[in-house]
Length: 322
Length: 248
Image (cartoon, rainbow over all chains, first blue to last red; front, side, top):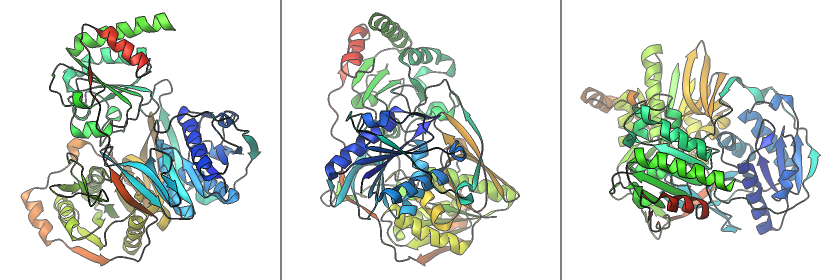
């Protein structure tokens, strides 16, 4: 009857979002008066999951699962759910989690609520709050099935330490050919780059930067902050920057702690796509840019002066405080 | 090759979002509806298969009569046939289940849907549909080629891409990248005229019980005051980023 949480890892390591997901599962388990069981696939060390409230960890070690495969991973989780007789299943909302979730939901005949941002409003009936209309609204979704599948958004619930035992138990799921019906031929991923999905800070540029040759100063600011680089839709459409940097309604969503928009006026689609970021800093020379109304901090000024100056100030601050 | 493109009928990306009936319904008053952008990228890729490889392209939507304008637009862009499953869309599972019936009846090789609709952002219909009909599935698809009954698909992953090969039938969830923005087509007069003559079949819905229900809506809390910082006083900004946002 425990709450089951799938704990995503990459190259054997958990990310911060995984600990957020476990924290959230613990929150639900507390509301329901039950415990948390985590399932981890090919993770090196699962003890840290206890820090965030996992009472038990089902550890799966299987070479066939060395590359993420949605069908197979969903099957592993479903088998864990059945073994534990879990009624609430919690996952994160990474690209891989979103890929496997609908497969898992059908397998478990579970109602699935994605993009959830808070603990259930009530657990009977089971109602959760989620974002809709690309952050322009929320809805309260009621899940009426016996098993409930909940996807908690990044940076929504946060990390909550809650020391538990995290007893590890080996788990050997039954995998068949049908779990590997697609072939992952190759994975092409820059290993030394902060991704928009993982970044705590995102530095984003718009048309106000006038041309791709002016991105150097944003790269420097991003470097100093350990931030990911992003851009607005026009910038990607004009091919100043690669389209994987495009953030907004039809691009990537951003849910970072801090979003820095330089020379982006703030079209409604852009504001929606980055709306889940906690703090927004807008630098623009046009005081009437609509983005200022949605910002926490605003600087009206020439980006070509403000950005390098800000980079220097942050460098100096870091040198002093590190 | 037979392709089915699943089309969602959604508020235009510039729409102001309001709720009505004591915040239990989305207020459609004054809202323009369009083909869901993620679906339109997929439809445009389907046109490429039609023109280069002789595929036939059907489009399908689950919804009431009011969604037919969106299906007509898809026909004007170049789809051959449209199907409307005559029932309101209630939740992701119910829609996937209706689509599964259409997909099975039509015996499609490739089904393209959007990564998510821009209204409910559920992101679950394509995967559920694939699972329900026993087809392979690739999410966040930004490239697809099909040769000799074999698909090569590029999936966007966090910080990169993955190349996948798969047999057919296959369901992919498309997004920008499967074609570029500049590849999108605005229907011309001839396309619009022809679309009027193309078949739009209305089919009865299956009895399906939804698994979830949106019981209430909320608008985001109004945003607090924006703290404006003088460009000559960036120390104040650094201080805010440290003490307030805790970002540095």
